[in-house]
Image (tube, rainbow, N blue to C red; front, side):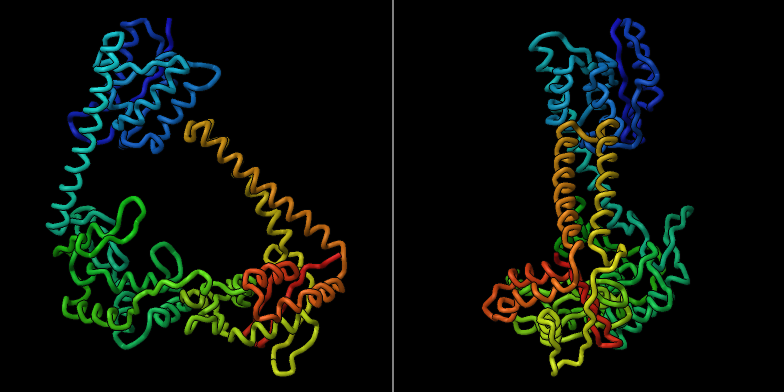
Length: 484
């Protein structure tokens, strides 16, 4: 007696698709009539999942993994129709070929095929028809969604300030959130910037619907959303990468919900947005970096200070989170003062013209400030990742080739981290005096204006773990690596 598994998939509620129970009955009846053993634990079911992409079907992947295993638990995969197995002809051929190599056949209980080349030809025709149906259905769905959007229908999560009404399907105003939206609009029209609005909202404990602090992009999205003027916007983003489409492709229609603002007021807001917006100018990557980038940290939130430019050169640094509005403390410092202060510290002397205090320290043994601890934490995460990718392969989510590639990637990452950890361990056996001697040995390169910026970045990172800048005391805490 041959052993089989059953694969059941339902993607929609349409009548042309049999229910999971109906499909199961057909598979069991076929197995009984053909003397095939079909245990319940070998029946894989997926509800509401499209057959277009196999990698998005976990039960399907689990079934394939079982089929490829050394135990060879079944010889046949029973499906109601070949369209249940796949609606993508390319994937269908690939997976059926893979199964064939493992002596597993795919059998449709409602589409019997003759043996030999003619049966194979009929099977390919069925696969082509299934894929064509999927493409046509996708087009019908898109047309239906477009028609719904044109009628003012709602097809996405309601925006901040509104809540869904499951009975009527019409979003209703959420008063607490609506008050915040009204404040954002008023403050913006009173002349405040996106950043200033964030810095008023976040200290008050006001958060987005996901519980995160308000950022510039969040405020801008709220100000640009026509939903608040009573209109529904759809087809704004691409489904695959979420990039914004050309505005000519958007669908904006009158909604049935109550607006927060008149269309005239909303238009005035959009006019101000256009007025203050500056077109993005692409610059060479050379001018987007600085040899102190990512190594100087904000004393308030721990984020890196970001290098800012003017006229093609870096003029000052500021906390990255401060730009987003999630850090309330400014850490502005000119690039010239920061560079001078760091160079003087490396040389072991004070710059009489600078008013910054220096504290020479070895890296502290904390998760935040100790590179070794950070590396150890990353190594622990790699161990967890290894367990996850192994489980993903066992569950059939990843193929053997995907598992192999993920494993090799983790092995490489683990090796680099362990190498860095060993180097740090060697350095920590020395004393702080080594820092001064090494700093002096590289000063000629550091103060030379002709030294390449990337080389300077490498030099500073060879002796300095990180730098904390405290704006309130106007001081730098420089954490050196100890050198043997």
